[in-house]
Length: 541
Image 1: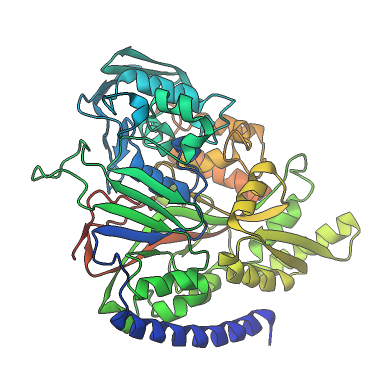
Image 2: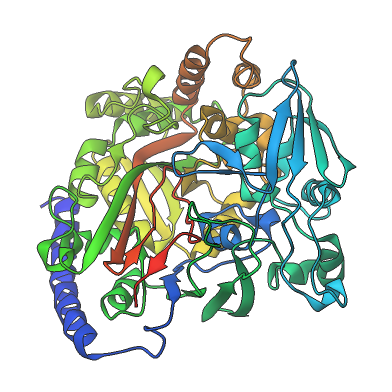
């Protein structure tokens, strides 16, 4: 019995135990009531905790979701990922595609705070965006979103209602960048008084306002009755009275909370329990489908293993290339993910954005891998290859599968499990030689994925956690947002080929957005960037 089969045997025993727990949970849910189940409060869990509610630090989905409820920017993405106005009611773009002029709505107010004085609030004006953007690129703030303004030459408030941004060069995806939560508006008088505490007591303009945060226990947001958006019938948004976010660190326990009625959504159930939740097609098992709806759709997220290759880009290229050919991604998706997602055989850019330049660059070829590993050992005069991959516990089964696959080609893998917060910090500081990571599109454009390998985006000033650097890559990347350059397709194809050649990452799979909700929840829509938008959600009591 090989290691993978042993692992599956152990996993199956664990699953039998979990099935018993699930059945108990169903029984409990029929007789157990939580004190606030009947309230119009939407409840979800964040297993990896939340580090900040300051939009300047909204670099991860766990932070982006609550920040999206509290803050607004100039523009936003609708469910089809089309750009629409947010605090900007309209905008114009100059003929040379470098100057963007936004008209600011006159009916947007900040959430109430005593720090505003006797009126408790005030209207948002263009100067607020000038302050917010200046703060975002302030080295003292050290925002991970600093990079989004790399192509911005200047920005300024023309008057209270007109805000203007000038680019260094034409960049077609720019409006998409402005939809990122980094670019939210914040009030200067609140931030200047609270300082770092603003991340724990935020004041924004969004459909929900901050109420309280008991760290590691619960975060509560309440309805903003002064919110400016309305539905198509003229009713003010949001419909919910509030949001309650718990911080249960175990995904199995999280699912139990859903079954007992104490949560209104579970997102991306843990790999170790999906056998009990889904059938072989990736649909809900019958024992759940009568009481719960499954919201499932492809979304722009690539899961991968990253290597820290700073000052060492060429030395281990052969090894990394061999590893990429030694993993059967199709088998991984079939047995570990119930085919919820797609094997990442083309590269870093996921399905939905890679259609015009899709190529099977990462084919499974164990014979080639063994041959390359033999050459690598000979060149380096070594008998054994050992690598350590760091991950959080949610992806242990994926790493154990990779461990089993690479053992077949002569590579020994040690798995180091660490809390999500330590994993994020280690990636940002270059602490780990190899690490599990993912990239969810901040905006729907291929440029966003290739930014992971642009040399000017080396962490901590950007998302280049592998410290990859290549002059040819940089030159092509800088052309990608200019419509006058060669086609996106040709550039993207060349960029993917460069990444494959040096293999700073092991692309694993392109994910799917999976949310399980009780049937009394409506208006919760899936989208390609897995954004959580609760302002139109209805909870039937």
